[in-house]
Length: 191
Image 1 (cartoon, helix red, strand yellow):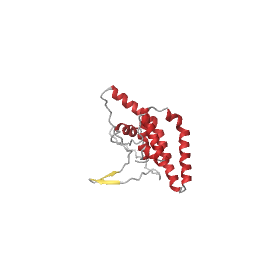
Image 2 (cartoon, helix red, strand yellow):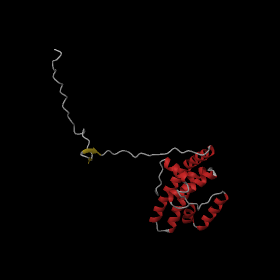
Image 3 (cartoon, one colour):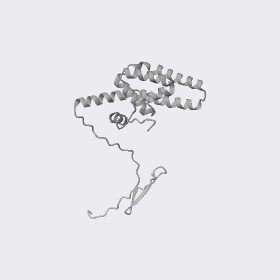
Image 4 (cartoon, one colour):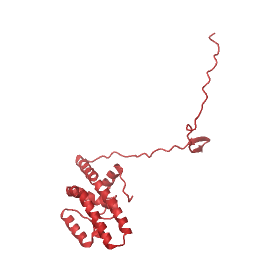
């Protein structure tokens, strides 16, 4: 009786529904069908090694400053692009001046207190990020909107506090700022 062959159990028939099939592209490689599977991008990052604790502290302070002023730079870029669109469709000089004044008033009302409380290094980072966001230096933006004399006055005041409104943003020179922005997942509208 031990040698008797028992009948094999038949597997249940495979019944596929209309949503059970996944259609995909295939590639034939050495006679085998290989499906194309789309995966999310993989970011490969390296662990940064600092020479000293002071370098680490400086980088962390810069990171804090960049992340603190980034919302202001974003808003400035968005508002500047909106103002440029509005000015492009308005031919009347008086209406353009009203648009510029209302934009300036809106920005002052929103951020006047916060901007005044920035440190000097945060102000420098903000100037660089505004240039990165808009593609124009802060000096050029003031000159375009308010005229050359006001730009000169603002530049003079900025110089007293150690800033330069004509400073441009160069990703190769500001590698740390660029690395912080990339790490935070931020891309500007000009990228």
